[in-house]
Length: 470
Image (cartoon, rainbow, N blue to C red; front, side):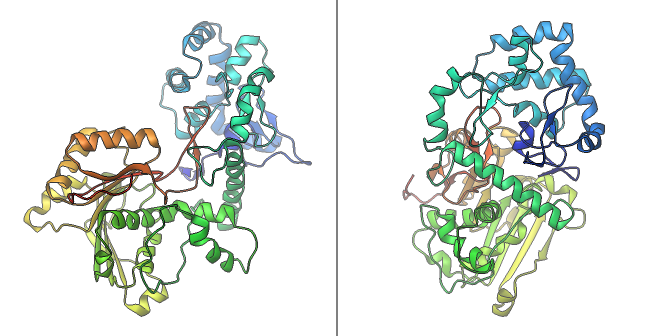
């Protein structure tokens, strides 16, 4: 991810376990040194610190003042102490508001991440900042898990009760039955992979891959969602042979492929039988943003690769965020396809509309044609623009359009499912873990454990009165 062309520091850098400027990790040749003023970031060399100082200077002084200025400290210490020990969200919001008042401007994503992802004790959620204030020691610091270095504890007494769960118990938000510690170690590998890809490709860009092979017939997606079984052999073949699973490539690929595979998974669950797979054309309406759906638009071709009978795939990507696509909105665009699709005459058409879905459909009136599926990826339905979403949902229900919603985590999914049911939706799928959600995990910023991911949870509405597994 990037902010104004600058990569957002990975988790390892946000928690002081990698250089905040170049993201390099400590090694035999390289040690990390904390910023002597704010103590919130680390650098691998004076050169990296100097290069980063221009962007860090103002925020550094604010963080230092919050902790050391007598007036701020008098308010900060007692306020943080009365917030429940594990309520990381309240603490982060308080610190963000305090920093924004000091800077007289909103914090950007990089600055907010530095506060929300500040290392916290797994047991009591004490942060380095609180520890320094309690001990009146500017050098006081949490200790990190010796295996992953991305989990922390304030004392041996607090590490003992949580160590087993962290290192051995399967994590509900993860994959493959791995524990939080192993998943954290994968995060480090993924951060290294991102650095390599960035340096190899020049400008900041996302990694995406999809196989160009065409399936000879539709094969239903397994409910277990085994990404390695589905794509591992093809990735290994692309890399030149056998060997162990290409973990970071597989997880990186799942971020983009989760979008077309979730569409196929929803169609599979919202239709009786496989008649839908025999159609010559398929139309999908997507409530979209520039963040993911547009960035990964090329991998939607995987739908054609898995549905050999479909000759024309039309995707309407609709959302106010698309206003930045000058010259592309309001019209259908023939997208490039792979040589195999060209030989078969398969086409992929994208239509972009810089409007909410209900505004777009209202403008069509009687010309509106019902799609095969409507889908909202990571909708945030329960978090923002609830009234606007209500209009869209009511239209989808009234027109009896099969519709799927994906969410980043369980809490969002359950809240969204409640809203959908209250508006009259007949949920025949979920809310449940999406077996084809992304495996590019992101630690929950407002908790001491747990992860979220793109399309991690799914629920779907259909006017058909049949039940699907939940």
